[in-house]
Each structure stands twice: as C-alpha cells, then as structure tokens.
Image: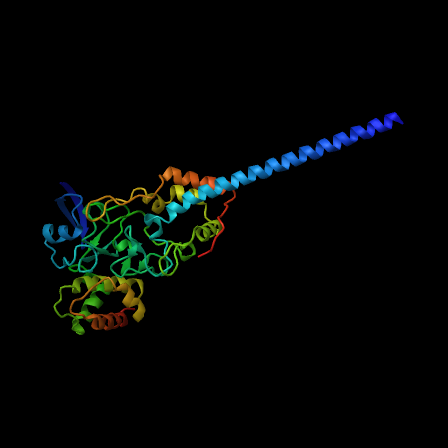
Length: 201
Length: 154
C-alpha cells in the first residue's frame, strides 16, 4: 500500500516536471519567435528605407513613366514605360542610358536599364510611395530570389554607384551601404518576412 | 586624348579625342558629318539621333568611350538601308520639312520605329516619336509620312 502511494507521488512529480518543462520551453520558443519577428521587422524597416529612396523608387512607378532626380520628378523627354518596361521603339531606355554611367554627359547607366514591372510598383498612381506594409507584402509575394536580386542585379548595385549629375556633382546614395542592405534583406527573410501592420496603400 | 576606331556608315574611321567626348561632336567636328544636329545637348529634343547598333540613340549623350565596336549609322548613311530609303523618299514626297533642323533626327527615329513596328498605329507613332521635337510643329505631316513609308515596306 505504502509502495503504491510512493509510486503515485513519483508519477505526480514526474508529470508535473514534464508540464513545467513544457511550459518553459513553449515560452522560450514563443519568446524566440517574437524576438526573431521583431528583428525581422527592424530589418524590414531598413530594407524599406532603401527601396523607397530615389535611386530605387524612381524606376518602381505605377504610372506610364519613370521618375528622375532626388525630387522624383517625371522623367523628361516624354519617356514612356512601353510594353516591357524598356521604352518604345525609337525612344527606348537605351536610347540614352548605356551599360555604364556616362559621367561626362551626366547620364546614369547600367546593364539592361529598364523600369521595374508593375507588379513591383512601390508608388501609387499619384507618385506617392506606398506604405511600409504595402511594399512589404508586395515584396513578400515576389517569387524572385531576393538575396540574389539585391546582391547581384546590376540595376540594384547601380544605386550605390550612381555616377555624376549633368552638373558634375555626385548623385545621392541610398541610406544604407550595399552590404547593410543585403544583410537587412537576409535577416528579414530568415525571420519569415514579417510585415508591419498598417494600411496597404 | 585617346585614339578610337569607329565604324560609321559602314566605313572604318579613326579619331583621337578624349573618351568623354560625346559622339555628336566626334561626328560633326572630327568626321565632318554635319547632318546630325546639335539641338539641346541634354537628350531632350532628338535632333542628334543616330543609330548605334541599330538602336535610335541620342548622340549628344553618349561618350565615344562607351561606343565599343557598335556600328554607327547617321543620316548620311541611312539611305543605304531599304527602310531608310523608303522613309527618306516618303519625306520628300510628302514635303514634310519646314525649317528642317530637326528632320534628320526625326528620320532616324522614324526608321528605328518602322524597323521594330512595320505597321505602327497613331498611338505607337506618338509615343515613339515623342522624344523628337519640332519647333515648326510638322508633327501631323511626320505621322502621315511614317504611315506612307510603312505602306512601301513589305
């Protein structure tokens, strides 16, 4: 009889211990997930600061034309998007933009100069940048390899080597270095691509 | 100062200029091909348009150092091409020109358009020729002449 009581007590202790360990582990996991989510959101904020900088967002328009300059004004010379984002037959992007910057004439250039597709528009039809939540969800739904895109794509890399303006002064750079941008992208992806809450416009 | 080998209108040319020199000035000053015009110097008017490897290109913006081995065709050479000939003939037939200053650039853009889109609509003409300005406002005649030239192209 006494042996059975001891056995029951032992089992209670054992089950209680498992329960406590389980609760602690679950809390730790939740805490880790929350921390990762938080790190991801911080990283996303950095990514957003770059993709909405003029060097990037000027070619991620929702309209029929690109923008130019730090004030993001409409591209001059009646330039239009065209069916593939590369302009139209006699007025292509490469009508002016070469494979590298033309610093003597102030024309920026990189291999394959073109507008981002409308599926990657980061502005509304009034040329206002979309919210952080909206751009985040858009980027999250893209099927491209974002790490590779952000680290290797010539037009992305161009943003950190944007050449000289026609007046000979240097174009402004994005707010992070390229390495910081790629690292922030990696952290955001590894955290599960968390997006901030907010309106989607 | 660097020496550059260029192919212009099918001929090999050699020029010694700074790599940042715009192609326009190589054509006009070094090679004396003055059919290509200086208009704005910032790519806004289209008067300086030439073909660089078949692409309508603003020669005022492209430094000679970035041309590489891509062939250059100017208004002096575009008539050797059947499409170019058809456009130039249509231009004469329709008497498009008023003052004429912008017309070499207009023709170079028109040829690039017709090579890409042999039967262009009004909308495509408007968009493609939108970077070529004409202070005499010959736009209506240009549009009709591009259509006329397209009828002579198979």
